[in-house]
Length: 145
Image 1 (cartoon, one colour):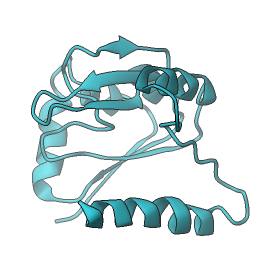
Image 2 (cartoon, rainbow, N blue to C red):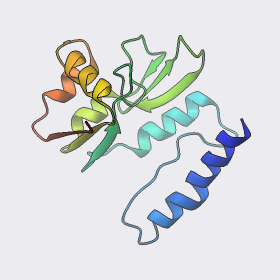
Image 3 (tube, rainbow, N blue to C red):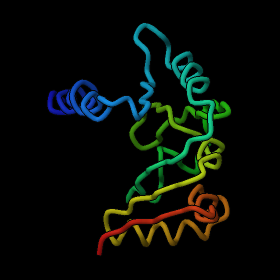
Image 4 (cartoon, rainbow, N blue to C red):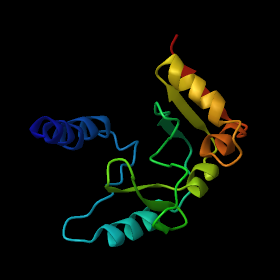
């Protein structure tokens, strides 16, 4: 557990600060200290109320992206969803399908052949998020052999 906390601290305190030195990128923290999960999601929903120029995501082994699964979400906002993982029994805040559809450019990373095959498989399922995203005009899928 301590290793995970160290990695998160590294990402938040060192990596993102160095990337953002020239203020070319906007990073929006999701969870706010001393606020409930729901209120944090509501604030984040309002913060990201714009059309992103570029969205970069990776495809997971099970075919989900951005923590969007084919499950019933606890709460839906315009740009954010709150969902609960059945497998791991924890809640998560993620960007919504609506927010992803607003992006003019989308890059999906498949860092294995298995993930690329899942991308192909789920993009044919009309109820899956990958089906919606695979129809975008400006979609780049990057994979490794």
